[in-house]
Length: 327
Image (cartoon, rainbow, N blue to C red; front, side, top):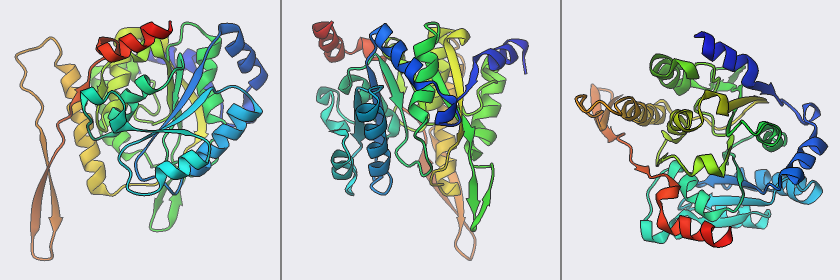
């Protein structure tokens, strides 16, 4: 690890693996002292099985019992199950992604929901939490808010954790970050070695200041996390980034084919950013060919992995007008 990355890792990594490690009254006092408003966003598409419990715990703990959070918003991305109804009954505000900034249309992908959530929330501090989490994550929100509330130099905080992997009924303590280890980490270490200290660059739990998030583009698909990390490095500098050890993260796992598509989108996202300022390089490929065996031979299937992205929110007139009116 490069000296600057090692120094960052040692000084910008903190621990909040349980509520016992977090001084909640101190965070609440810092929030009040800074006049902050906190929004928690859960992007969701067909997460009826898990979203209700997550929202209920968030609202009960951090809105009602301790006023650390001011709004909990579920961004519903065209769910065909009861995700929206369950989340609303559990206490969240629920907004359909397609209904936000309708003049800009709607695209598929998690990044689209996150980008539009900036226009649907009002907090100056925004926490993003995935909707498919299966373990106790009651400490995630205060853990992620800690560096933002206690250090004004920090603009963006990534959660990190161990990720158990379940294979054929056997649970392994680690191994649940296959795309991270095989795709994202080698690319980041090669192209942006100063980011080598991030344990979970693709993790779905992170928090940031609106003032930073609104300055960067959001990739519409799976590349959104790595895109944000690279782009915010340019905006905030390495000292403006931090990470928090949140302990363990348990969630559903995808098939190898789905992970291949995810890896393809992440590769396209990284390559697009590596080519900035070099017009002589060819554009990254837009298709990923995968193979299945039908019993007689291998059958190729090609799927698109080229990614599009939404522009920095500060360039969107509808958004700028809305926040100018309330400031």
